[in-house]
Amino acid sequence: MSLVSEHKKIIVQNRNAYHEYFIEDKIECGIELYGTEVKSIRQGNVNLKQAYAVIDGGECFICGMHVSPYEHGNIFNRDPLRKKRLLLHKKEILKLFQQVKQQGMTLVPLEVYFSKGRVKVLLGLGKGKKLFDKRDQAAERDAKREIDRQLKQN
Image 1 (cartoon, helix red, strand yellow):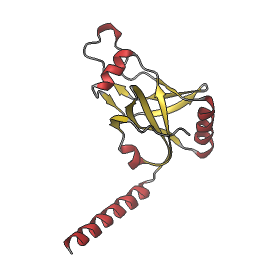
Image 2 (cartoon, one colour):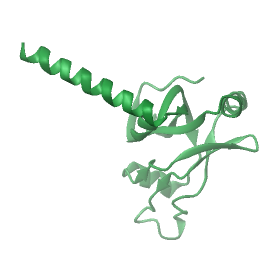
Image 3 (cartoon, one colour):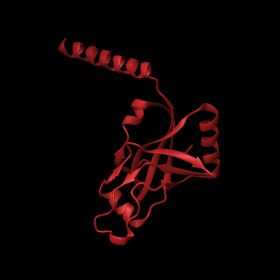
């Protein structure tokens, strides 16, 4: 899989994805956007809360990613919730498709950021957590916090 760029300016993160999924692998991909969408993303007007990625017809798309219309964009603004194509190599798409179909995993967007002037999306290959997994993780986090608090006092 692709390595994540070193020089990046993070625009938005999907922190809820780490709560809902066990993220097993990450891949950086480009995204096909129009000019006014890029300008809107530069202003930080993007939301990943309900976003997910699908593989359809040998191409990868991101659905549910809300890019607010650019305020100075007039007729050139696009639908905020349109499907946007992700730019990946064919081998990467096939590998992701196999993992999604065979292992029941989900493609979840984790971050949107600028890398060398281009908009990139960090996709995570995740397996959904059950309710008891979330409770266990919360209990571990609380226990660690309590231990750190005790050590700080001593």
